[in-house]
Length: 387
Ligand SMILES: Cc1ncc(COP(=O)(O)O)c(C=O)c1O
Image 1 (tube, rainbow, N blue to C red):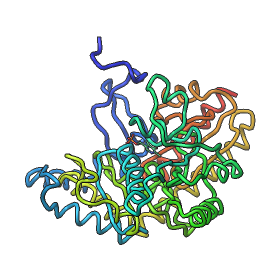
Image 2 (cartoon, rainbow, N blue to C red):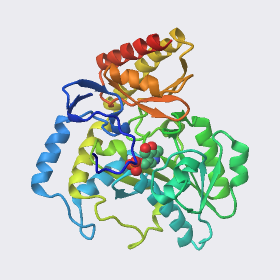
Image 3 (tube, rainbow, N blue to C red):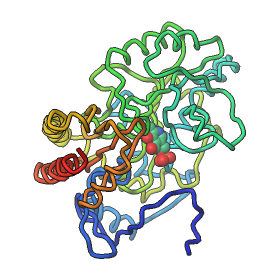
Image 4 (cartoon, rainbow, N blue to C red):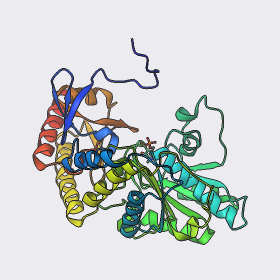
C-alpha cells in the first residue's frame, strides 16, 4: 500500500540511479531516458560537473534567507541577463512559481504606473503554465480547473485564432502570456512571424509580452531561448526545468521597465535563490549557454528530425506529423499514444505523452548520435509492430 495520494497514475517502475542518458531500474534494467524528467535533466543524469558542484557547495553553504546577499545568485542573475534580453531576475523553485511570478510582475508594473485596473492576462486556451491556482486558470483547461473553484483575471483565445486574440484585448488587459512552444499542449511551435506580430500588437496596445520558456528554454530549442531567432524582445520570461539540470530552480527574467514595479516586499520566496541551487544553476548555465554546446543541440536536432521524418514516410498510417524545435520533439500519431509509449518502454526507451496524440521526445541536450540511433531503432520497431 502506498501512502502517496493518488494524484499521479504512476508507472510500476522505479529507478536506483542514472548515468548520462540512461536510467537503471530497481529490477536491474537499463532504460534510455528520452523523457529527462520532462525536459529537466538537460545534461543527463549524474553529470560529473554538477555532482562536483553539489559536493563542493554542500560542504560550504546550503541555505540563507533572501534577507541577506547571496553572491551565487548575483552571479547567476548576471549570467542570465548578459546572455538574454533581461535586465533583472527573481529566483523561484519551480516553473509554476516562475509563471505565477511573471503574472505578478506584469500586474504590479501597471499598478505602479497608476493603472491598477490593467490586470487581465490573455492566454492560449489549453496551454500549460503550471499547477498553482492562478496558473491552472491561466492555462484555460477545463480538465485542470475542474473542482478548483475560480480564479479570475484570465482571458483566452484558441491557438492560431488571430482574430479572436485581437478582439479579446480590452482596456484592462495587462499582458499576453504564451508558451513559445506549447509543450503539454502537443509540441506546437509558435512561428517566428507570429511572435513578431504579437510583439507589434503588444506595442500598439501598450501591453506586455510574457513568453513562457519553462519547457522550451535553456537550450532545449537549440538556441538559449526558443524565441531568439525571431529577434523579438519579450518583457517577461519565466524559466525553470533545464536551468537546474534536476535541481529545483525557477526564475522570472524581466526588462528594466517592468522590474520597476517590483519594490521591496512585493514578492519573495524562502527557498528561491538559495546558495546550493544557485551554485548548480551557475554550472548548468556555464555549460548550456556556450555557442559550441548550442550548436551541438542544433546538430543533434537536425539529425533526429531528418530520421524521424523518414520514419513518418515509412509508416504513413502510424505517424501523422513530426513537430517541434531543437530537442523538444513531438511525434504525432493517428491513434492514441498510450499503447505506443508502453511499447517503447518495453523496448527500454522512456518518453512522455502530450496532448493531440503526441509522444514527447526530450533527450538530454548532450545526447550522442549513437543514443539517438538506438532510440530511432526502437521507434521504428514499435511502428512496425503496430502498423
Ligand atoms: C511551459 C510550462 N510552464 C510552466 C510549467 C510548470 O512547471 P513546474 O511543473 O516546474 O511547476 C511547465 C511544466 O511542465 C511548463 O511546461
